[in-house]
Structures are given as C-alpha cells and as structure tokens.
Image (cartoon, rainbow, N blue to C red; front, side, top):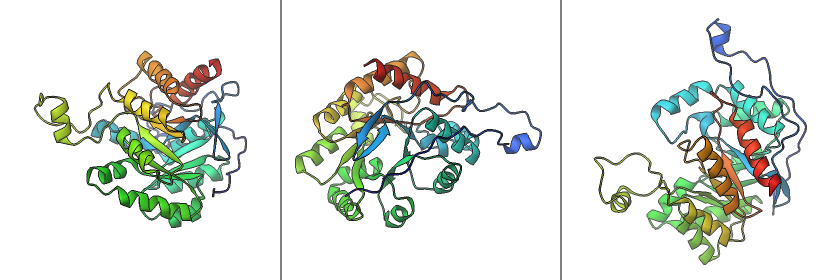
Length: 309
C-alpha cells in the first residue's frame, strides 16, 4: 500500500532574501545558488512505486552540518545554511527537475520544509527513520521511509537485525513504501537472502561504519591513531554489485565520498554510479554551493550522462 502522491507546481527561484550579515551592513559573498534558473536542463525521471521522481535526489546532510569530513567544515555549513538558503537551494533543485528529497526529521528540518512548501515548492520525501515515525508520517505523508543506515549497521554488528525487520513491519502497517539503509553490501545481501518485506534500499557506496578493529586489520595496523571515517577506493564496486543483483530499486549515496572527490574525478564518480546501477535506481547527493553552483553542476552532469545514454 502506498502513500498519496505529492502535487507538483512550477516554481520561481526565491530572490531578495536578506541575511543577517546584509541587514547589518557587513560584506558577504553572495550564495552561488539559483542565479540562472534552468528550463533546458532537466534531470531525467524514473518510476518509483507509482511516482515519477528524479534519478538525482537532493541530500540533506550539508543543510545541517552533517559533513562527514571535519568539525570545521561542519560549522561552516551550519553557519552558511540559513533557512532562507535551504529554501533557495530546494527551489533551485525544482527548477532543474529535481523533485525528490532525502529528508532527515531532526532539528530545524521540518520548519525549513514547511517554509519551502509555503513558498510553492514541492518535493517527494524519502525519509530516514529508525524510531517512532507514526506522528511524523501523519504530518508529512512521505512517499517512502527507510531505516537509517548507521542504525542498521549497528544492528548488524550487534546481531540485532530482527529489530530492523520489526520496524519495517510497523512502517508497512502505516501504508508507506518501506526501505532499509546501510553502508554495508552484506546487509543488503542478507535481507535479500532472508526475503524481508522491504521495497527498496539506500546504500552508501563507501563502507564507513567499519569498526576500528576491522580497519586495523584491513590497513595492517599502519596508523598512529584511528581517524573518524575511512573511505576506501575498493568499496564502491562492492555496493554497486549488490544493487545490480537485486530487482528492488536502490539509491546510492556518498558517491563523492562526502566531498573528498571533486573536479574531473567527480565527473567520473557520477559516470561510474549511473553506469553501475539499474535504470530504476537513483543517487542521493547533497550540495554546498558556497563557492560554485553545485546544483546546476550536478544536474548538468546527470542530464549529460542519462540523456546521452
């Protein structure tokens, strides 16, 4: 059973919002946001349980400082992304045909989303969960929900995957499309083998939830201390392989290694992602357009890759 489709309308890019710095006369770099609304470049769509959604889905992490890089960058992201800028970027996503949002129900997220919708914006919500989502579901009516990847991985590492399976059953009772997120290809393989009642998967292409002992073994103990997150070049092919093997739709995320990949290497990462996943799969990508117009850049990449194909 599925939730009702969200309506879509054409929107114009938000303009003229003043930041606190501008109000007080401080010099401030203008955001790289939606200076040039696009009509010619539109991200191709795919069918997803009765909905037509963009194969490029905007991620939420940069909006609220979840950068998975350094504490300094996390702080810069949080300072940059005022509610006005979050809405501005979401409107720009709409202008490029990006009509789905990997939404995390925490902190200021609901307030920003409601403001965006009040301004005429519309996005299909792919909600990350893991707790009691019933009140949130009644408020948002999301297109789908999935069990948060880090929570899934902890359950996998501690032998408590039954709790994840039970959560999926409870979400199914609400009538919503249900998925499971993970950073580990073996988790998807296990769920497939056990035949869970799950509709889709969200898979991080880098296995960033390995334990310290696992990393020491892989890296032969050649380190002074264990860093917060490790991204191995050998990881993406493993996740892409399990995504191709399942018939269920999948969303790949962190295809740019949480911002560690940029420039021409980012072009290749997008190409590898779309060549490696199925035609009914998509990708989550967050944006931080403080220096350059990442929304336009990513939309143009995906448009080139998929329209050409």
